[in-house]
Structure formats: C-alpha cells, structure tokens
View 1 (cartoon, rainbow, N blue to C red):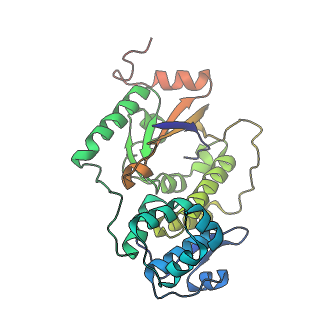
View 2 (view 1 turned 180 degrees about the horizontal axis):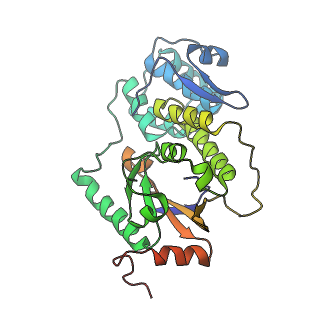
View 3 (view 1 turned 45 degrees about the horizontal axis):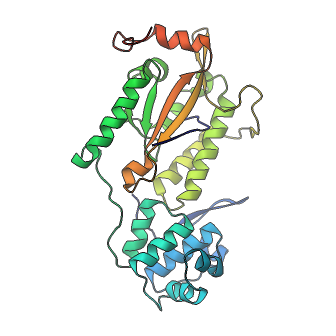
Length: 301
C-alpha cells in the first residue's frame, strides 16, 4: 500500500458517443469531438478505440510505436483494422497510453480478447484479506476520522469517528453530492480553496478516464454547483489544501492523507482511495479525543 499526501476537498463500456478533455477547451463531447480532433472513422472497433486513446493522450503514431515497442506502420494497420492485435500488444499499447484498468478490459474486448483484469465484488471471498487490512487501518486510526471512497466518490466504508466530523449515514453516500447538498460552503471555512482543489482533481480524473459517463456527470454537477470559483493558485494559510470545519464556535483544522493499493490488478481495488484525516493543531486534536467513544479511547493515553 502506498501512502502520499494529497490535495483533498475529499464500468462503463466504450460508447459511440464520447467525451474528451481538451486543454483550454473544457469538455468536448459527441462525434464532433473526434472530428474536431481529426479522428477518422474505422471499421475496426479496436482500431477506433485505439485511435481515440492516442488522440486523448496526444501521441503520434510514431511516439506510440516507440513506447509500445512496435512500428508506426503496425500502429496504422491496427487503427484501420488491417491488422489484429495480440493480447500482449493490446496491453503494451495500454501501458504506453496509461489507460486505466477498467478501460484496458474494454480495449481487450474490442479486439475480441478476454478481459485481463478482474473486478471483484466487495463481499467476494477473494476480497476478504483486503477488507481486513482496510478495517484494521480504519480502526487503528481512531479517534480520528478515516473513510474509503471509490473512483466516483462513493463512500464504501468509514470508521465511527467520521460521524463526529461528517455526520451520520456516510457509508453509501456520495461525498461530492453530500458536500453540495449539505451546504458545505458555510460548514467549511476555507471552502473556495477546498472546492477549487476538489474540482481540479475531478477534472484530472476525467482526463484520465474520458469515457467514464458517471465521472463526467460528477464533473458537470460540480461545475454547475460551484459556479465561478476563483482559481486558488497557492493558499497562504496552509501548505496543502485540506478542509477546515466550522463546528459551533470552533474551527477544526485537518490534514488529509490518501492511501491506495499499489500495483493493484483488480479494478475495484485499483479504484479505492482511503482518506485518513488528522488534526492540524491542538484544538482539533482535543476535539477528536473529547468526542471519542469508549472503544475509540482504548489505547489512548
């Protein structure tokens, strides 16, 4: 598991109608998007998708061939359907184009090949060891909040300390919709910075997975709800943008660290993100410890 500091506010198949993030142009959608990019039609489903990904990533056929240990001629033949790729070639191309696991499966299926990556249900037996590891991490983090979200900001799990800061009924909810619906602009002191950072991260996710309809809908929702927020280049109040919560007369300043499973080869595990919330100062430290349940307090001096 790899842990790194992050900026926090905190399966779709390929479709004939598509969207792609264009720098300085926002989101361009539909068939016209690819016409705008100069993408020609192809009789090969795999070739069409490969060409789409190549244009999304800004790769020429020459560059893609070099990074995938192939030739520009072969890349051209793959895109026009004159050649059919092997499983190894599809995976090499996916590596070179930095395609997420979910979309790699779709690319393999478009080539008439079986998926390479599993997508286990959270309750599946093979998931049990990873659930235990996550549970241990969440439990050990008390009395401070910790939660697990998927690639669409849905809360998969949370420890009990989350209720103190984020309210009840967290598991099963969507963090983005929760923030928007619950008036986070008044509950989070540094809302402009947090909201701007969250929107930037969402747009980055969409650029990484431009054919993900659910993710695109979240970006659209966030853009509509957040309006014309000023760009926050550098916060003068903190080195990392993390939410400061207004609870009564007290401001609870937090630091958020994200943990992920490193080198996951299962789609579900690859998309999980564990957010560990820490106190930034003594006021926040005392707040979390004072609100800890008896079980939370075990082992706390």
